[in-house]
Amino acid sequence: MVTITSLAKDERSARVALATTLEPDDAVTGRLLAAVGAVETVRLAAGTGALPKKVDAVEAGLWRNKVAPRMDARTVTQALSETDRLGLRVVIPGDDDWPTALNDLGNRAPSALWLRGAASFLTAPVTDRVTITGARAATSYGEHVTSELASELTHAERIIVAGGAYGIDAAAHRATLAAGGQTLAVMVGGLDRLYPSGNRELLERVGDVGLLASEMAPGAVPTRWRFLARNRTLGALSGATVIVEAGYRSGSLNVAARAAQLGRPVGAVPGPVTSAASSGTHRLLREGTASLITDATDVTALLDPPAGVSGQAFARESAITPSAHREGRAL
Image (cartoon, rainbow, N blue to C red; front, side):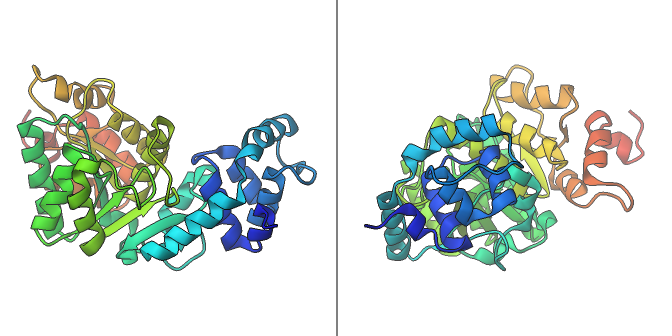
C-alpha cells in the first residue's frame, strides 16, 4: 500500500507532500523543516517518530494532532497527476527558479510553489517586482489610477504582481498586458481552479504570457485562511507594495502589514475624503505605514531609494513627508 511516507522519499517529494496536505503559513511546519528537513517532517506529521528537542514539545504535539489526519497519500498522488496533466512546474527552495525573496518569510515561507508560465519573473531582483493591490469593489477612480501606475511601471520594465481578484488587482493585470508588460498573479487556490471564476479569461491570459503561481496544489480551493496566508506571499515577492484603494478593514491592508513586517516599503494612493473605498489607504498614510503615491515616480523611489538609504527607511520618511517637500518645493 502506498503511504505518504513512501511518497516522500527525498526533499522535493516531501515538500510537495507537505504543501499538498497541510495549510500554508504554519510556523511550526517551518521550524520542523529547518530543524530536521522535509522527509523527517512528513514522517513526524504522519505520527511516526519522536519530536525533535529543537521545537517546543507541547506546540509540536498539538501540531501533530492537528495535521496527522490530513496526511493522505491519495491527495498527494491526485495532485501530482493533475500537476503533470496541466503541465505545471513545481519549485522548492534551492531550485534555480525559486524566488529567494520568499526566504525572508523564514519559518512561514512556502514549502513549494506551483507555476504556469514565465518562471524567470521569480529570479529577477526583488526590486524589479512591485505588488499592486486593493479593493475588489474598486471605483472608476481607483481603476484609472491603477491602470496609469501599472502602465508606467511596465514601461520602466517592472514586473507587476497582484492577486488576480476583481477590482484593483484585475485592473493592474489588464493594464500591464495591454502595455505589453510582465505580470504575475499569485493564486489563492490550485492553478486548476483559477479564482475568481469571473476573471478566468484574464487569468488564463496571464498564464499564457506572464506567470501564475500558487503555494497550493491542484485541487485546493480558496478559503478565508488561504486568502490571509496568500497576503504574506504578495508582500514578500516584491520590492514594494502599493495599495491603491481599500476600505477601512480591507484585506489588502493585511498585505501592506505583511510587507511592512518584512521591511518592504509600502505605498498608498490617496482618494476623495468622501470615498469609503479610500478610507483604508488614508488610514495607512495617517498611521505612517505607507508613503504617499501619486504616480509611478513615487513607486520607483520606494523600489530604488537614494544611495545609502534603505527602502524601509525611505518609506518611513516619505510617509510623513509630502512629495513636494522631497522635491524641494515649499509646503
